[in-house]
Amino acid sequence: MLLRKRTLMLLAIDAVLVNLAVFLSFYIKFEGNIPPEYSLTLTHSAWVAALTYLVVFYVFGLYKRLWQYASTGELLLILFAVTVGTAGTVTLVYFLAPMRFPHSVAALLWFTTLFFVGGSRFMWRILQENLFTPHVPGSQKQVLIVGAGDAGVVAVRELKNRNYHEGRPVGFIDDDPMKQRLQLMGIPVLGTHKDIPRVVNNHNIDEVVIAMPSASGDVIREIVQITEKSGVDLKILPGVFDLLSGKIDTKGIREVQVEDLLGREQVVVDLEEVASYLSGETVFVTGGGGSIGSEICRQVMKFNPGKLVILGHGENTVFDIEQELRTEHPGIDLATEIVDIKDRDKIQLIFERYRPGVVFHAAAHKHVPLMEKNPEEALKNNIVGSYNLAEAADAVHVKTFVLISTDKAVNPTSVMGATKRVTEMIIQTMDKRSKTKFVAVRFGNVLGSRGSVIPTFKKQIAKGGPVTVTHPEMVRFFMTIPEASQLVIQAGAMAQGGEIFILDMGKPVKILDLARDLIRLSGFEPDVDIPIKFTGMRPGEKLYEELLTAEEGTTATKHKRIFVAKPHPVEPEKLEDIIHTVRERGTYLSKDEVVQLLQKVIPGFRKQAAKSVANQ
Image (cartoon, rainbow, N blue to C red; front, side):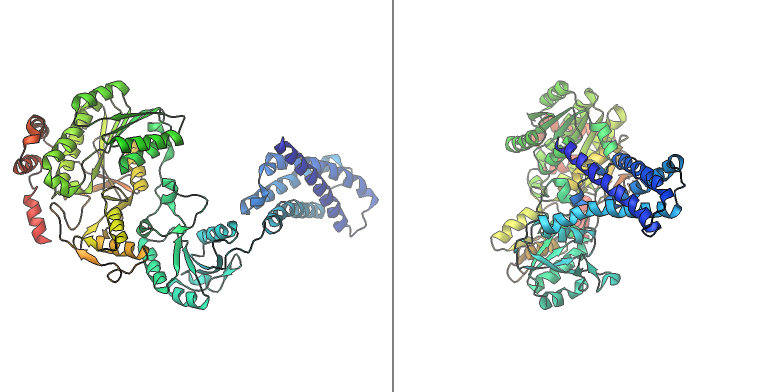
């Protein structure tokens, strides 16, 4: 009812404005003295124009717009609508009126109608922003915005939308020489990022907001370091991964986080391709309570699966993600199963019960030092557990089975990495004899996951240090949890069977730099307020991780962030021998026996490790 009243009101206003435009067009043409022979043409033009323009405006959707948010898109829409309406009016008047429609009147009609209709729409926005919005004193905090682009405009609007309670923008910083000394939204560009200390001092800046969504991690890191030396607060406009993870809310400007220093480009998912293999399917996610598994569950729910089944061993984490998803997606069928993937009979029973179409296998023992102390558990869980799942998937003809692997599987020096490499071999072997498409996705460390360095560093900083780093030259690849999860799902959509997909991890990050960045973001100075202590490399660790073996190499896919490793020959008999041995006496295997078993399929394991450690 309200929409109908609003539409009728706008139609009435437009009818008056169009008639006024027609009259003014003739009045201006004849300089205030309209000849009598054109009076009937004026009358015909008035009612024809009113009807024509109103119909065109309705068809173009001008009555379905919120004009208090009008922008260039609405301006172009009005321009097109008025042009079509003018052409229609001139054409109809030509056949209906006794006198020819003067060309100059047609041009004046187009201009005056555009002026009146466009002006009436944008006047509503001007009044909304300057008259109807209550003005409050706001904050006296002076804000400097780094980035005089689209994101900078968003930052200014964000501050304005909060009635300047969070601060008042006084200037922009931008490295583009063409923008220097110009203004954006009435706010001047005061220099480049190297001028931040000078601008902070000269303009009494209290806070710096980074609004550079496309900037690299190195650039963000440099700005953070410059700003912190100036002693002012630092915030950032959220980027892509806050949107993916659902963290962003109406209060968009937030504190800088260590994830921002990665400077990742947006992950673009082919929504149609992903939806085609997930929509309506029963989807299994093993390790569904873990960091990666739970995020895969969140992402899968966006594509309307027929049923999502969360498998996990830890009841508390499974319960948490179940409650979250039931609240966020009440219309989607959801089930949970508490199960140990080493339990072959229970796994087969669950697969028979639900008969899934897609499986994401994220369950694994991943902690390198712990698996060095308990190597037999790594074999039982990572190898035999994964084989149980693959075997059950084959039996019920699952369409796609996606294994979550790790960069530690490449030239492994740890038991954990070696077991994951064997698991990749199992997947490739199963694919050759099964109708199921078995694939693996290999990537590096995940920021913020349980057991990763970030939570450990944060706890150490909260206690006043020291922050412990194993080696000053230790480097790792990092991804955010939503980024990794979306790429895993995309890789599943691209699966043909037997591939090991490699995710583009960007540049490796030095762990020492990560520690220093996190200390600075916490408001402290590294080695002054919070000491950094080197503890030495732990068993099974490497100074650097790799994403490919020397034999594999990669081929590109249609997704620029995903590559495929070339297949490596695998001997099924040796894999079956390992699985049989672990099933028979896995609990009683000694550390030496575990290494010997792994060396059957990875001949360079441990021998290569000793040589690698010596070189490092």
